[in-house]
Image 1 (cartoon, helix red, strand yellow):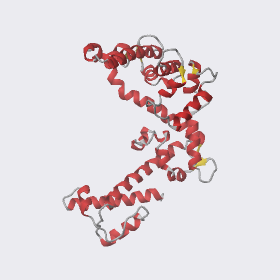
Image 2 (cartoon, helix red, strand yellow):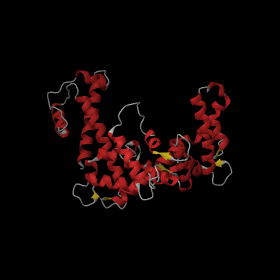
Image 3 (spheres, helix red, strand yellow):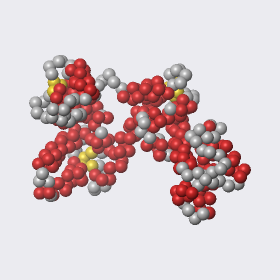
Image 4 (tube, one colour):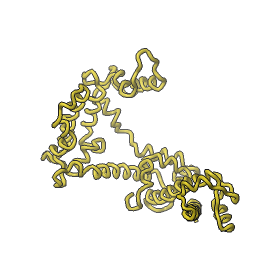
Length: 332
């Protein structure tokens, strides 16, 4: 039996036994943890759980020291994640040969990215499809998003609020019109998806570049100079020194962002910065995960190698940053 699964089953036994004893005492498991003692087997992170089970069964009772019950619940959660992770690995291994290649991992990451985008749209669809015709018109979106502001402008008297709404409303309309490929001022699912996630669609990339320029170009000259580039990521205190990472970013600007060396980025250079043609994010992440987890250096990963380095996968797009551990098998 897989060792993770064996430990998981051991913990399920412990869990039910502890729950039963807590219930007999009229306490829930959290209250029970305040008065527990265990003369049988001391629990540490390296303790064999099967030994604990054996000892507990032999004595026909289990009592635990303070803190050990909490450790059990934490460990149980971790092993539940590992079992779910094992199922995810089976899905990543597209050809089912027991090895996850960089190509399979890249394909899976792209699948996760795409699924996240469409799930996000599905979650908000009913908020905007006010007449339930399975399309979202510009008027519906405007009403759902800006309706209160348009009906109560006097409540937004502060200059920053006024500026924000006056800027965002025409900007959203311009993006909506770009996403509305058939020009009927109503977005179907695919069009609305491109509206909410323009970076995922080729026909929306000009909008992504333009909006980035408008956000960073504070003096309105149609370019992003070095100071504007830095100000987008660092708020400089008057007279204070710049951190080392800011100086590194200045070097990045002059060496890699300002391609024609005129001291500023134009639209083409901004596009090269935020939408590089020669960089595949999914491939880069797949290669990184394989490099960090490939113990035998065969450029492929076994399930054991992945689960051994599972924390790295939990923090990556391969598991949607851990959220996929809460999903059922059919939802992946």
